[in-house]
Amino acid sequence: MDYIHTVQYYETDRMGITHHSNYIRWMEEARVDFLSQIGWDYARLEEMGIISPVINVNCDYKKTTTFADKVSIKVSVKEFKGVKLFLSYEMKNEDGAVVCTATSSHAFLTKEGKPIRVQKEYPEFYKTLSELAG
Image (cartoon, rainbow, N blue to C red; front, side):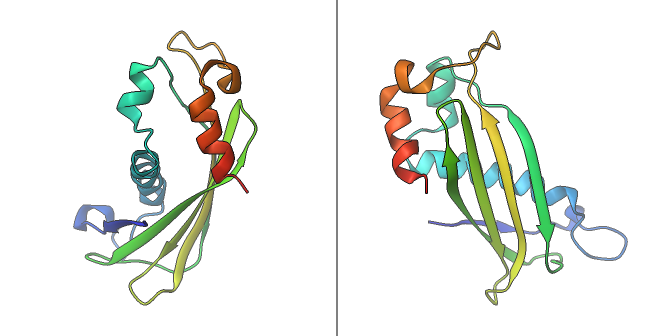
């Protein structure tokens, strides 16, 4: 299921369009929702001792959005290599037009900042992400 974000007034700039930085925030909202939908919400991961910092973000802006627009965000696993997770995002307006495409990459670390070998240490989580990759 896609994540729906309603553009807030404070997210717009002097020109009345959504400031570009907000799309990255929406990616995080959608990513958190996506992980919850697949049964691995952030609270659960943190309880397990897993943190997942963003190590790269790339956005390609296609069309503008404005106050009160509803933006549908589809998140999918682009690639999963066990240590790094690559996600893709497709954001559409209410008319179904693509307003932004984006990618993000993430590492899996302990709370002390050491890399986690997900396949060995958390095989169920590894299996879920691997099945969604592709």
